[in-house]
Image (cartoon, rainbow, N blue to C red; front, side, top):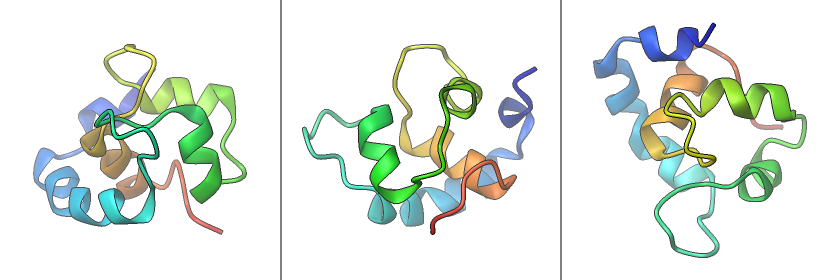
Length: 77
């Protein structure tokens, strides 16, 4: 179940600025790929990536990433 979608949107929005600076969008397409996220989150798995990708488009946008950080699905380090 994708509980990230139920994260309070205000928390996600407030964290979006941090998420945008913590992960580099190397190809400047406006979303993060698994490879881009792995640089900041080396322990990221395919399963967690799928959970974060709430809209199932194969990429993670800043709001999805902020929501995942807010609920502790991803942590840097």
